[in-house]
Amino acid sequence: MKSLVRWPRLVSLDVFRGIAIAAMILVNNPGSWKYVYSPLKHAEWHGFTPTDLVFPAFLFIVGVAMAFSFAKYFAFRRFPWSVYRGILQRSLILFVLGLLLNGFYTYDWSTIRIMGVLQRISLAYLLASLVVLRLKPLQQMMLAAMVLVAYQVVMVTVPVPGFGVGDLSREGNLVGYIDRLILGQPHLLRDGTFDPEGLLSTLPATVTVLLGYFTGDWLRRQLRDSQTSLVLIVVGIVGLIIGGLWGSIFPLNKSLWTSSYVVYSAGWCWLLLALLYQLIEVWRWKSWAFPFQVMGRNAIVIFVGTGFWTRILLYTPVETAEETISLQSWIYQRLFQSWAGDFGGSIAYAIANVLLWGSIAYFLYQRRWFIKVRS
Image (tube, rainbow, N blue to C red; front, side, top):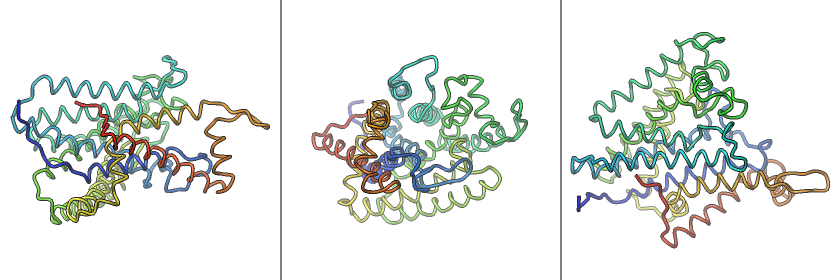
């Protein structure tokens, strides 16, 4: 294939990705977890907060981007082995990066957490890619719907030993039971009871990627006008209504990645994409979005970089007159809490992290260094 079909870059998608990565840094890096404003926290279990939108937004964006990157293969109706090899390679790299982040500092492979955010992105991307390449569009949509319905049926009908049928609590749900059975408690998050990025719940997370793919595949065929934005708005509102109603019988839950949560979070993604699409692609109001565009172009670097940076700060001890604390706590207490107070200092520390990594992203952008895990 000497000539490939290309579409104009969707700047609004870069901006959406940049907003997601900035939001991730903001919610994952408070000065102190004791002092976090409610909207910047995940729901305790069932429920939905603005923070619960960050992860599905990443997966949704992955799907939209897939539609544009895969389109060249559909244009030539060819899927050489190199395509599958590239997908597998990208998935493997993302999974390994996630393991390296999980084990950082100690690298105790007997207790390392196996799953994680990058691992879920890796597996969801791999599964969604295979669905897109092997099935026809109608089959893809039917499979996505079937997965969401089947996931609910399985979660509420399959008994968990010691807890019974339909237990959606943190301790008694089927997702956690399967992870403890297959991965083992030492390889799950924290106390080994439950991992929010579980194996079974990766299936509905794959549907989040597919919904992004369906959106991107539709977008690349549309004129960049207000009518396109309007359709996205309508679809987004419908998603919120269906997801909200579904949540009355299968609760919205990020940790379990419930079917209602998939549809509800996708509704917000459609609405946010509609807003950005109208502002940037239709009205050409781009200057305000430049900082997010910069961050969106090097999202994987920022994601991995912040992960290692946060761990370095947490594992570096600092001796004070009273006690030994982490370098992260020392910076928060001395540079932020001292003048902004508990909550103010905590969010100021998080904002400082966003600005730091935004500056790093700008440095890379100026030099046209765009680092990606390519498929």
